[in-house]
Image (cartoon, rainbow, N blue to C red; front, side, top):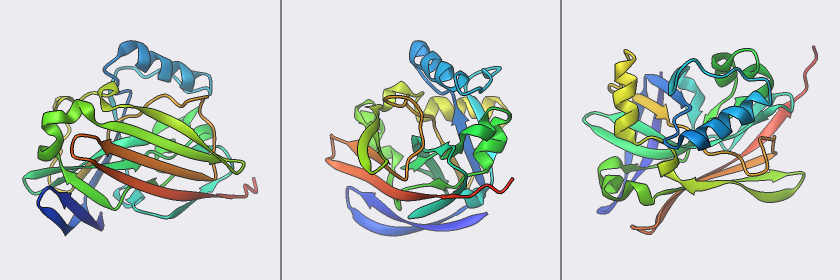
Length: 229
């Protein structure tokens, strides 16, 4: 488990919220649009990743991997980030945030669960109550930027409607025997990468709420460690 202190950003103001994460889930292949989801599956198949047996899939990752790290260290040059909306349960309340499912792409070709476990899952240090955005959920926008060879480029952008809704994902998780109880956190799927999946030295993630005029953001650097063998 891992204890994190977030800034809770609500319509009434901001406060601190400390949550102990007991369970971290990474939901994969969560697309509502079957064609778009197929595009992401094919994108990964080009890297040697096997097609999933069913969708969505719920991978379990060590809770210690989640946190607002300003820098992560990875093994080699074959990892990359993905912007995903994040769900966190604290008591009777579900909170929403933004995180990166940073993944080792070489390891992903032989074991997706292994690849998820190998990298940290950086997240923004702030959360919103899900109840405040449920009424206009489909207006939220997910976005990421990658700095590659010193150049900052738009890496992902699109509405959260590309992924299944929080209620749908939690229902499906329960249907597969999961329990999204106290201290659970879930990364909820991503958008295709503009120009294809590739590594970056810096990654930025955003979840924009144009209705309430606010954005959750996080930026982290990626330090690639040498691989000796």
